Image (cartoon, rainbow, N blue to C red; front, side):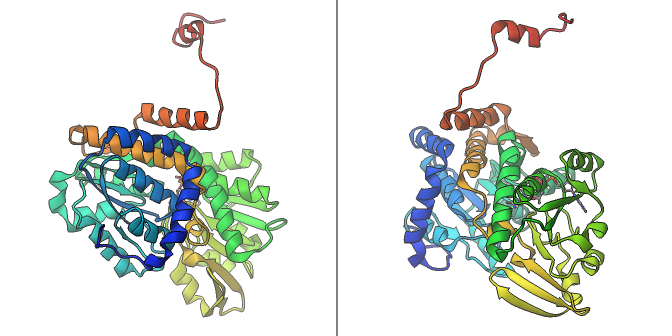
Length: 420
Ligand SMILES: NC(=O)c1ccc[n+]([C@@H]2O[C@H](COP(=O)([O-])OP(=O)(O)OC[C@H]3O[C@@H](n4cnc5c(N)ncnc54)[C@H](O)[C@@H]3O)[C@@H](O)[C@H]2O)c1
């Protein structure tokens, strides 16, 4: 039993176990990998450090990696997303050291990352690249021993590509986010459902008939817009990329600059991966009572210092809601301190979608363990065969069969001679 961990309350373990098992039942692909990893032990003796949202689904990924023979240590990738009962269950029941407490301050957050680095991992798992960037900065002595890492989200992949472009990336990393079976489903359907879930749990405000602005029509933004429309909201998209703006238009959404949308918005939800996309001038133009929420990775999308500067008082009428009373008399309602609303105010993505994301993670880690030192110090795509394997396993788990190409069709599709 590990004695080195940092969690809020071990007494919460019982509840955590039940919830982890509940999620596991919704993760059939991971279940199959659990059986395979237990038998083949592809990670035997490997030390793995993970910096992920500490949720029930992550707990199941940790269990699979451990079943594969790895020694695993986990810290949080966001100070507000840790499910304390899950952290307790991992420590108490599954004997996996966890360093994560919901609501931890920034110093504790980084102290917990350092605790994982102190385990001297050879493989890292990141969601946002905080662990890997801390490793490069504070414990570079680990770099020569590193086999590789994985990255779960768009923002982390962008950071890692920037590191690679600077020649600063010290080991190979797999961009799990870029697997088709990850971002097409997790970012779109997962973020779509869980973001709406977070907003509704935090506010219990009716969405039907309201104006709902989504900032950024990427994979996450598309999902949020789709689900907000399903609730009967009038959805407006703001974008900076012409192609995405055009797509949103043809998907039937109104598209306009945020400054024009803000006075009409009952909700403004960001999913851009960009900084201060809701800036001071937007806040100055925003409609009285507007709800502000973020589903992008970092809490930089809404300019919170500007919101504070414009306000005379902040009240907390409900959990996860801060009401900013502005000097001009308007009130703006910020959810979850501008952090990932789906993880802070709800439970993150449903397990059935994380099943695919984390099957990709498990397969990527096993691939790194087999290939690691032979790979360039670059950001690698998920091997397409593994991506396809996740899709095949997921379909099978849903009892969905598909057709196969005939030989004649295969020939036709690979020939150039046949025309009209
Ligand atoms: N909440 C979650 O659980 C969750 C899940 C997956 C990804 N993410 C995070 O969500 C963010 C978006 O991810 P994605 O996969 O949708 O990325 P993406 O690159 O597909 O989409 C981002 C979009 O935002 C647009 N954008 C950038 N700056 C803008 C601005 N100033 N105004 C309007 N639009 C702007 C871009 O043009 C792009 O179309 C990232 O930070 C990612 O890490 C969160």
